Length: 432
Image (cartoon, rainbow, N blue to C red; front, top):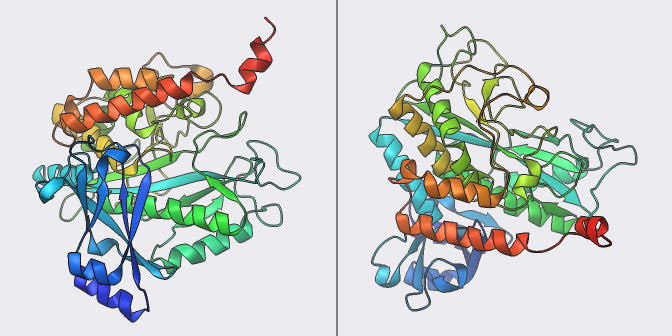
C-alpha cells in the first residue's frame, strides 16, 4: 500500500490513469466525490468543496478542503479513488463532523484504554428489476431462499462478476451467498480496525451498486424494500484485543466461552440500545425491518447462537480463541458505517467502564416468548428521543456540534418522510 500521496500519483500514472476521484461521506452516510486531474492533485495535494451543500457547515463558512488518505487508494475504471479527510476553511482544523474523524477518535479512545477494536460486517442487500420487483427464480417464496444454489439462484452470475470486481479493487470477500429473502444476498467483509472496516463497507456498497447497474439490476441497501419478507441487516461482529490475545475469549466459560469483559461490553450495548438505534438503524424504513418474525431483533436480550436476540454470541467451534466475538444484529446497511461503528464501540466501552451486567442470556425465540425486557424503538423519532436523553457515552467520540447536527438532520428526515401517506394507507383509509 502506498505510504504517501506522491507514491499513489506515481502508481496511478504508471497505470495510464489521468484522473483522481476524491471521495468523502457526509453525516447522513451519503458517499460523495469530486474529480480532479492527477496533475492538479500532484500540485495541490488536496481538493475543495462547498460544505454547506452537504449539511456539514453553514453557507457563510463553507470553503472546506479534502485531504486524500493514501492508504485508501483504489485503481479502477481509469481513475484512482481516494477517501479523504475533511478540513475546515484555511485548513484550520479537522471537521468534527467528518465521519472518518469520528472513528479515528474512537480508535484513539480504544488505544488509551489498552484495547484494539476488530470489526467485520455482514452486508445484506436486495436486487430488484427496473419495476422494483425482486430478481427471483419462478419457484422463489419469501423467507425460504437461504443458500439457494444455481439454477434455483438467479443471482449466481451476478455474485461471480461482483466478486471479480471487488477483488480487482483489492477487497477479500469472506463469503457471498443468497440470503433468506427473495432476491436477497449477503456479502461478508474482512475483520479489520473500525476505520478500515468502515472504509471497506463504503467501497463495497458502491462497487456492488455499480456492478448491478452494469447488468441492469438495482442493488439496494434499503432495510425493508419488500413487505412480508426478511429485511436487510448489517450484522456487526466485534471483539477487543490487547497486543497478543482476544479479550472476549475465556475457555473456562461453560456457556459461550465468553469473558467477563465481553459480557460487560454486551451490557453496554443493551444499556444504550435505544440511542444506538439512531445510528445503526437510522432511517424511517429501518423500523419496518425491526418487527417480529423476520430474523430482526426487537428486544434488548443476548444469547449464544440465538438469531432472534439483539446480541448473539457465535458458538460454531469450541476453543476458537481468535474467532470469539459478539454479533450485534440491530444495525442495517442504511447506516453511516463510521458513525455506527464508533457509537457501537463507545457503548460497549461504557459497559466495560461501568461493569454493566447484561443480565442472564436468553435462549428462547423472542418472537413467541416475548421477554419482559426493554424493547427497541419502534420509529426513528423514538430512537432520536432516546439519543437526546442518552448520549454521554459518546462524548469522547462525537462532538456536541456533530451530535446536534446529526439529530437535527434526522428529525427533518423523519418528519418529511413520515408525512407522506403510503399506497397501503390509501387502500385502507381512502373511503372511511
